[in-house]
Image 1: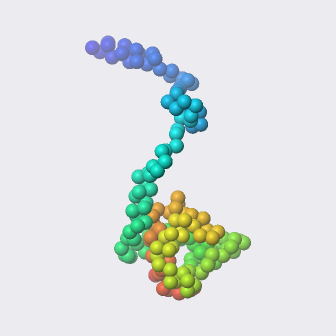
Image 2 (image 1 turned 60 degrees about the vertical axis):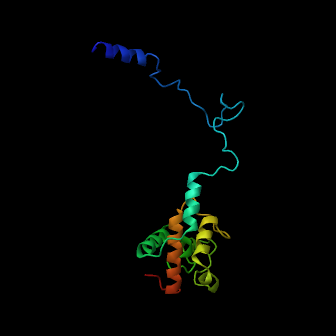
Length: 163
């Protein structure tokens, strides 16, 4: 039986192109035999919803409980994604503003203080004014954490920081 294994291996490898020069594949925009005159990847059928979209929608529908861990996560994510424009304390004086970009509104305005956390989550998700959507960068749970942290900045007041 020992002599049969190398022969079997040679027989199996005999059909392979070991140089890998001629490997079959479908080009992204090439024609495939499965779809006449169509690309190898077809768009999903109308009305298709990905599992990720369902999970995101569920996470956005239900805010997490307010905890110290949530605020810590919100502060961390805020410093990564938001402070560059909105400033460390939410005054609208971030680094990009100092380099000529339009200043976002201060979180300490009466309008934004009165806004519920859901409003902040929606702005992160969809964008507003010159702010583009961060939906592809910030996970839904982190949007809630950022919103909670922004509310702590508002309670602390302008120029005072939070926690």
